[in-house]
Length: 178
Image 1 (cartoon, rainbow, N blue to C red):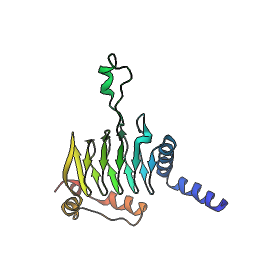
Image 2 (image 1 turned 90 degrees about the horizontal axis):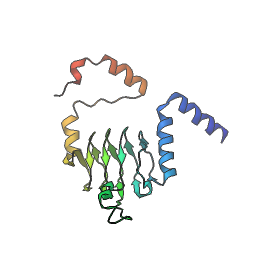
Image 3 (image 1 turned 180 degrees about the horizontal axis):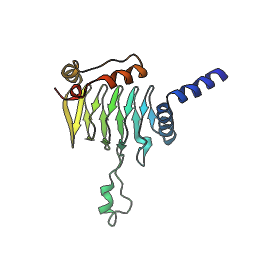
Image 4 (image 1 turned 135 degrees about the horizontal axis):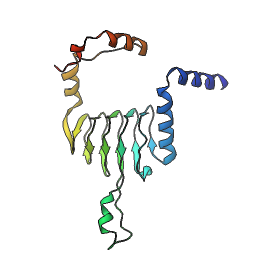
């Protein structure tokens, strides 16, 4: 047990980004968000009803992502209906990547194996293996299409150290879109 604690602390010192991931996930759980296994959270904005959010296994939530579980627009009806509220659940499937600064709105269900592009505003139900993008977001292609379009540009690294040294050697022109 003591060895595990020491190793865990040593691992965090080597990989400081793991600290943020761990604490963001633990924070989300403490709020009532249901969180699966093997997730990475770089964002902690889970609305005022976090207990309405369910996140599957192997999900990445990048920085600036917001989950909104209510519709504040009911404010305009409050004088006539003082107790009015409008809520909706958010369910994220397994193996999902949510890009930078995306907004996930109430009553949204993202199925398994989906990629949400950065800056998307997502509402509704999306089928498995979808690339979702836009404002409002829509399915723009499948994950298989995405892989095929980009497979010649993918790079595979054996380690973080290996990644840094190889990226530094890539000429600028390699980063331009084909």
